[in-house]
Image (cartoon, rainbow, N blue to C red; front, side, top):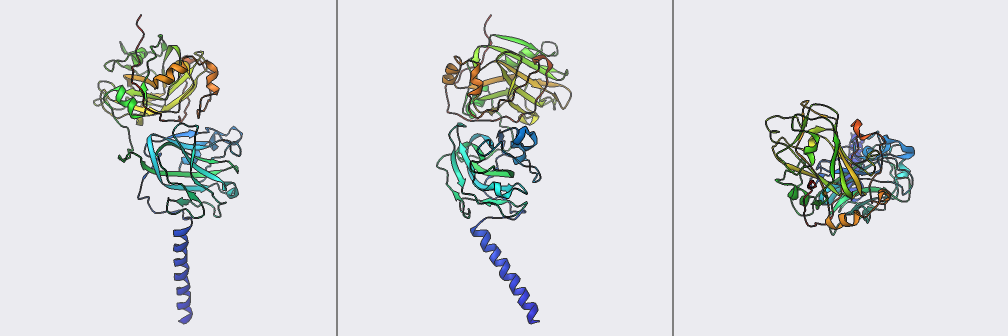
Length: 406
């Protein structure tokens, strides 16, 4: 009996020691308790940023693998200090908890990793650093500002719209990254589309403005219903729409001068609430300077919209290069019939003025933008599934994208 009691006592002591270690170092429990402060930034509408491809050009080892909820996949950077995986929000956030699972079999590559924040994609501030090499396979390391172990958490003095996992001292392979936070302005975190009554309000919500670009002409597009063709996407009139059952679909405009953007706004049409499933799946907006080679800039699916009429929705992206042509493409719609009333390009007036003098070489100079380029003809309507980057910049004067008077 004494022997049994001794064994039980030792188990209790070991358990207590385990709790003490958890409270002062790092959690390595796969089944961690629920987060009580903050939302998962990806679930709150965050868009993935960073390298689309990993080591050796492997798309399966790109940024998506770090946020896919699958511990058997992993983000494998291009090299030491070369590439990152992150999340972009539509408004500034304060991180409240960080959970990371290193790649199985390569735990030593985790040492030296960083979690950083930024508002422009160029200047990054370190929030969590001094990671040690992980010791357990398939185990999350959990951090809060008050529980960091040997790592250092620098509490944010401002909110950031961009957060990234990055390693500048080791290769930095990682299986999972979960970032939790709260809006810096104290508002409630949203987990779905945010509706707006007009394009200017939607653009202002992502820290941008509808651009004054006066596009020169509608170039071409796929077929639409009677008086509901692809040119209606860009006419600054929410009462008109592009509606079609011919998939895939596309619509192209050419600007008077190359223009950089940092966000997009799109609006539902007159009867989405009555005829559900008409919002586009697999949509992509791309830029080009020759009308042939296209760079995907922002993408999404029907979750971008709600089943509401004449309602605008916005998405921020990292500032792009200046492009002369812009194209909207979509794979289809759940109902078999697609409709969108408006696509609006967003940016800053001052940045537009500067970008308008930028040549095509700006494509290699734009910060934090993946420049995967397609070589298909714009008429093919091919869709490239790209999770776009997003960024928020300071507010500027709002002006409207309007069709050039002929």
